[in-house]
Amino acid sequence: MGVNGSRMIRVSCPLCGAADSAPHLDAACPERPDERFEIERCDACGMLFVNPRPRPEALGVYYPDDYFAYSFAGAQPLNHRLKVRLWRVLGMLPPPERAEADRLRFRVVRGLVGALRSARVAWTLPAPWAGARFLDIGCGAGQHLQFAAELGWDAFGVDFSPQGIAAAQEAGFSAIVGDAGALPLADASFDLISLMHLLEHTPDPVTALRETARLVRPGGAVYVEVPNAAAWSLRRFGAGWTALELPRHLHHFTPQTLQAAADCAGLQVAALCVYGSPWVIESNIARAGLSGPRAALARLQWRLRCALGQGENLAVLLRPR
Image (tube, rainbow, N blue to C red; front, side, top):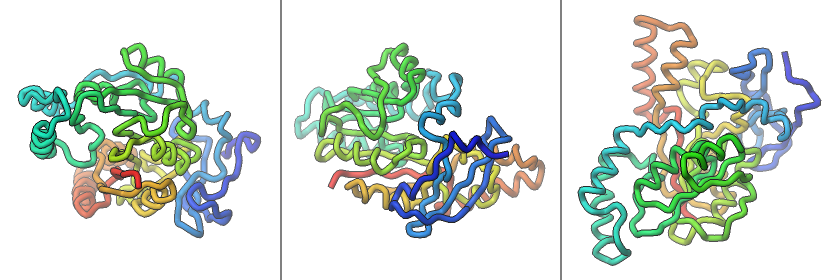
């Protein structure tokens, strides 16, 4: 069964603006299996996007009050705790000033930290001087704000959800309700900006990236992470792929289309990483009813494909031009 047409709108390609697109994949809303949505592929640039999609004022019903991102988890992953301890032991949380010696020591320690966490989580890198500013766009309840603050950042969050911002503020973080495409913040006011699984939700991803280009300081960086629509597990499980999240995920990026979006926004790719999500693969194995040897074979295939760069998460570190 489709969705009420009065709540839906057709759109042109959000990446290149072309009007011609073709059906690519049809899938159901996880919480409303009677509602199905079509992912189309742009004939001109290959961008994948939901079309038609719910009107902006109708999208809120797909974000219930108990949506997972609106609850502050509190618990910290082990690798984050190890990083914080390493910095404290070395007296680098945060460095007292931006002296040359501190900058050299920071580079050495950052190399050690890289052994604990890969470049894909570059947003958690500690600040090399006191007062460096971190902005989390799509902060939800503030989990990443907590991580950044503990690593010495002056952290600030934005989210379109009043429920998420209320939870972040209750947890003690500075955060406001805002539109990722038009933020009431000063130009060049942040050293590191994070969009962790935000870009696929926003109606206009290129405009959101342009906002980050406006807000990031010279020499700063923008970290973006999205589901990877070129993942092997999407080809394997199709419409049942857990990370489709229709219609909350309005856009479905591949490495090529994410780089093209960054280029349109005036940002350049400094690093790109594709990695696997155990949660996604295990969820899909369970949904597909695989067990025993069939489940083991799926896990083995997944590990091999992840090693070949076909995992479920796509991350880029962007620099202003």
